Length: 478
Image (spheres, rainbow, N blue to C red):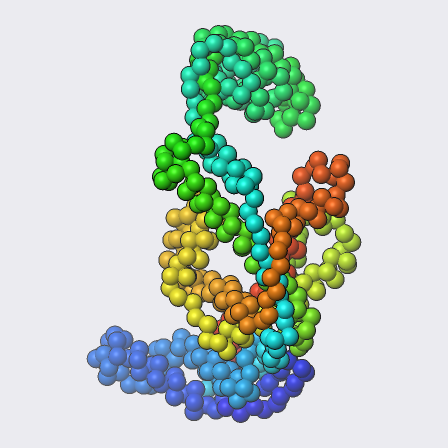
C-alpha cells in the first residue's frame, strides 16, 4: 500500500491510495484455489485444475470481490496508521485498475475526534426524590378495578351507563342504507359511540322492546352521502345489562392474588414509584447531557450531523403532515433549531460511545433479548413478525446495542459525578405544575398537541458503527 496523496481539513480526509498488483494477484489466486477444490470442469479432477483455467473461467467473477476486499483491508490499515476511527463509511472511487497493474483508488472520509476528558468532580447533577401520595395509589387501584368491570343482566328499564344488546336497521326514505345495520351489538348508553341522539332514545327501553330511533347525521359526518341526512333506525333490544365494577377491598385484593389489601396497595405504590423513577432519571440525564453539551467542546463530523439532521427532518415532516401545530414555524427557523439538535445528538453520541469503548462496556445476550421484546411490544398484534424479522436478520439485533451502551455509559457517569438530592413533587416531575402556571384556563380545556418525537428528544444517538468502505457506482477502469 502506498498513499499517493493526502489532504486534511479538520476531521475530513481525502486520500489517493495505490495497492501493488502482486498483492491483488495473490488474493485472486487464493480465492481461485479455494474455488478449484470444489469446481467441476470437464477434463479436470477437482483440486487439480490449472490456475490458468480457473482464471479464464472464474477470474472476472472473483475479481470484483477481491478488489473490494483489498480496499476494505487497505482502509483498515490506513485508519490503524492514522490512529483514528472513521466516523462513517468512507466514500471510495476506484480510479484505475488493469490486470498486472496497481489498483488506484480515492478514499474520502471523516474521522472521530479526540474527546477531552470529563472532570467528574466538577459536575453536579440533581438526584430527584419524591413521595407517592395516597390519592395516586387510590386512582391507580380504581383504574385496576375498572379493568375487572363485568355486566349483570338488569331487570327493568335501561339507564345511562347501562349496556344494551341490540339489533338495528337504519333507513333513509324507508330504504336501508349501506353500513346502517348490525346484530347483537353491545352499546353503552351515554358513551357517544353512535351519532348524537341515538343512545338517548334507548334510555328507558327494556329487554324485548322494539324502538324506532329518529336521528339526523351530523353535517360533518365522515360519509358525505350521509352528512346532514335524516334517518330512522328500527332497533330491537335483546337485553339490558348493568356494569358492575368491584369494590377495592380485601376480597378484591385476595382475588387479584395478594395476601391483603395493604399488600396490593404496596405493590401498586412500588409500580408507580418505578414509573416515576424512570422520569426522574430522564430528568437527571437531561441535566447531565446539558452540561456535557455545553462544557465538553470538540469538532463533530459534518456528515454525521447531516445524516442526523436528515433523519430528524423527515420525522418533522411526518409530524407536520399528521397535523402537529407545534411545528408551525418558518422553515428557516425550524432548520436552524433542528441543526442545533442534530449537532447536540451527534456530540453526545460520540462522547458516550467513546466512554463505552474506554470502559469496555458490554451488552449481554439477555439484554439484547429484552431489547427485541421491547421492540416487538411497540407493534401490538405483530409481535411474532418482529421476532421472526430479528431471527432472520441477526445483524439488526446488533443495532440495538447502541442504546443499551448509551444507558450504561450514562449510569457510569452518574455514578462518578456529584449528586445533589432534590425533593420534587410529582406535578413538577411530570411538568404539570409548569403547564398550570403557563396555560390559560381556555387552553387547559383543550388537549395538548403531541410534539414530534424528533423535537422532544435531543438526547444522544450512539455513534454509527464502522462498517466496510462504501462502494462507488463508478466501475473499474472508468
